Image (cartoon, rainbow, N blue to C red; front, side, top):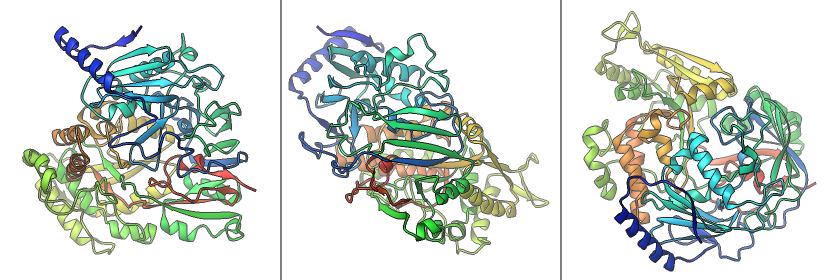
Length: 608
């Protein structure tokens, strides 16, 4: 018998419910259970696959490594808005119903769930849990835990989890080990997103304040590692669970190989690098080519005890730069934003800080097939954007490109264009200071976390140009906890911005720049985008029935974001660069996503 454990009905008529029920019964008759699911087409790996193609199923277990972070932490709960958490933590300790392959644009394979079932239109999805799935304390993972996790995260969890909950019409237990989600809207990606939500232990939080959890209330997970110790703000020790239930699953073969992983925290990136040089840290990611070529010649590197590894990838550039807060004047005026982009002397700054080695980001999806094309929009992309041409700043249909300077320190061409734009927006210099008709000075502050010296170096070079234009500009650095708090509440003018994007963008785009997320504290829409053009392109992407329509919608979204002029772009990271002790090894085969957030250490191992 099927028991409905939680249901949300949004003004649906009885006739509609009967019709929907009939459709679901018919679709259920034609649905089949599967070991995986892909956004488009079928999963690349067969049901009997042994391991992920970029993992070594025979990798040895053992060894201990230390990874460095900057800043600090005051929470070990990755699933609530309160506190600052080590960013890597959720990759080690918790799992979802399905697991992702980093060698396919968007494909999931069974993890906690042994099978997945859905109808052709993906109006619902059903998971059958593995009877062997266990939390780290040995208790079984039940349907109750699954339903509780979705409801708790959707109502009290971090804002990134709440959008999906609003799209779920009902959750029901269909068998002792099966759970079905029925969706409140047409959206093919929802079936996959449900498979990626973390599953927490319901009984741990009975009678406790989940959203206000203290640092000692570490959430129990089912992942291969457990938090075995911590020194608040300074270090976290993770130990591989010898009784980890999923060690022999194909998705887990050859992964999570280190016996112990310690996360150590340092005041800034310089201190972290010095700790790595001295041997206190086992591996360091380097995002600056100039430093990669010049700063890794210390004794342990020249002796061969430290190895430099480069890992190329095929994913989009994403967006890295200084984001402007459009919730505040004068950044709500696109002409001011364009002026700030014109003043940013990319060629000079890139040459000074990276040796000119790293290419500039040209759009949110540059370096991939999803990127907008230069010049005028054509085909389906143009059709999608045409109704919004009058509502957007110039460049939506005819094409928008970032300014190119001559590489000199003065950037006179960019300054002249910026001056013209500011004059058009009602600003003019008075005694060398840019003012509006009310005598208000044009002032801005770049908010940065004190842990990253490179961001500060970029800002310092940029501020010199702003001041030459008559803008009163400053840099404010705060500790990591204050930085997280202020950016979560959108308390900034400009700040550092990094948004990684995948080859399979989906519902997360609403959280990144959808209108509803612009005023939601803790959302990732830092720029405060509230644009019907952007919202419509995201909807077109989510509703695409073919790869061609999907690609056209993404290119249209890319154009809308670029012509909105929300971010001053920096340079791309087309290759992952990891310096590490020689005992850390990796498989020869690389995934198409290259060095993702958890590629190192997930598939690496220790070998004396």
